[in-house]
Image (tube, rainbow, N blue to C red):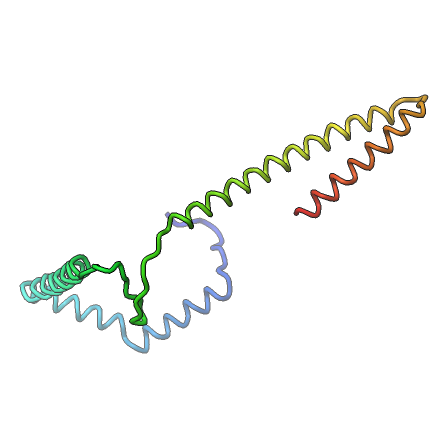
Length: 163
């Protein structure tokens, strides 16, 4: 369904690509060649069908042969050919998988530790706010405010450093 009113203006690069494609299709007369091909295919249906079936059969047979060759090739010494022709042995991947699991566990542990540290920072912040809200502070309150402030400052520095 066509939109009414103004058409949306395409970005400049898209307009340039369309123009280049249009010029190429005009130069190579793609439209005429497609029309001629379609006309030939409609006039020679049996030949066209035979060509399509033949090409698809060829592709299927070559793919099947390649697959069977790969499956039946001898792998007696667990070697694998790479694209450069060198052989390299297939290594046991169990140590790598264990390493990945350890990395995941460490990441989970770090996330839990950061969450706990953030929660501790929030509780210290609330405690600091409540201590600051007291009108008449004792010496122990003042000491506690300074301790909480330094703890909160250290937590913030650590979290910023980690990011």
